[in-house]
Length: 281
Image 1 (tube, rainbow, N blue to C red):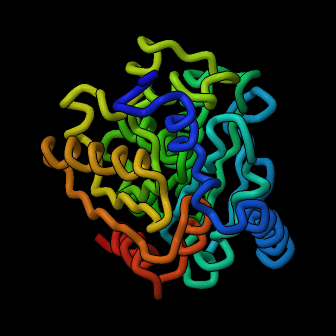
Image 2 (cartoon, one colour):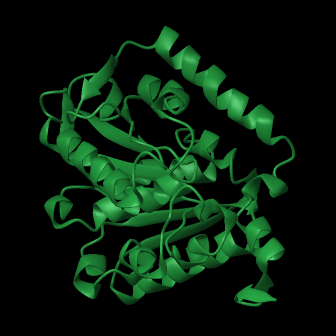
């Protein structure tokens, strides 16, 4: 029986199971943790900075010298897995080359709703922008990035009027911008979304004036992704362009949903070069 866009339930669940396209999903998640441990050990920084009063409302920050640009990263995990502790590894590439780095922590489903998680991430980004100078970074050169559900959360933050004009650019990797199919898949079990809430939470359906206020954005996808992630990116890219947003769309050869993020701070890669160009303007 068809559930969504010609997919039956099993097919739709597979489309939202990006690990089916990864050669060694467990090894890639282990690499997140191992490289993040290296970042904590090798780089000076500030852990557990509070941007709110709730337990998960903390972030980790790695400085890179006075007046450095700031790269803010929002991790993925389908709003229910991973944490900032697994997500600081891009600092290993960014900080030595003069870019400060912050990894945002937030609550996870089912303890927290997607609305609450979205608000937490937006609050964290706003806190970082407002404290950028105090942290020794350049408030005019803040780039926001996110991967998978983190791309959804980063895009949602960018659409918030409190952040309009305050982010230099964004890099959204393997993102989910339309939550309707999520409500119909296995992913929704801990989220509990209905179609009305999903639509309100979908950046793809944001108001035109909010979309038009987005900064320049890099939308990147790995070569080895399911078709639904490709559709999500293509439709969001088209909608953003229709509203006058400069969009640089990438399909990165050899990468999948999970290892694409390793290129984020590597300027010698096509993704890393595109991200650096955001804060250089």
